[in-house]
Length: 284
Image (tube, rainbow, N blue to C red; front, side, top):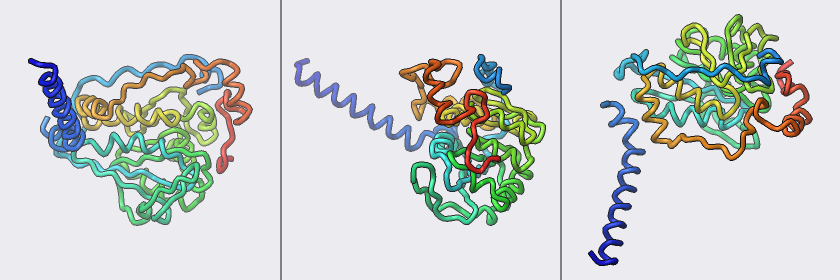
């Protein structure tokens, strides 16, 4: 074979691979998948959560799953963008977004997220997810709290990412329950009657309550939720489709790994962070 014909063959192979990948991304999650802390503990090594066993999923493929993500002004985009990327790819799963008044919400850094439903218009949901934010003033208001509490009380699964667990805890729904939170705020959970656990993923009551740590932990959290509800194969399939293969350039994602001077920088910006007691607008 000549160099020219070899190159053409290679180009054809690459083109085919590209089409295959696009097809998988487009159809895989639907057709293919449907077929087939105390302060001392904060800086120490958190107890690792064992991988989800390849056991029976809680739901059958034919069982619908309704997920509601609560949005609010001051929320953090990645807290719910990561989980939603996974949830949308699960079979027979409907993901909705809602805020107190519906319409647009202005997230952290001025990002406008639009067309949310009105919380009061939603009768119930199977799973409610409350993400965190840099300002919790909105979801800590009585009107927001009442709607979140109403939906959480009837939901099969009550979940949060980052300091969204503080919002849930403030409703009273996490009283006596173990919960994760961003490391800088985790110990404030006890002020609302919850039990702070400095892990990246935490569950209580056999998974009725599930929570993820700070921001990026939402992806790990969502994969564990997916494995529990739809099975490990569905979770692994989704992880591969989105190429979730983390290889961070620095080991600085948690105070147990970060250099002391970096932890000190965060403490300066968020006093009390290294004790898990940083203050945030909206939280007493």
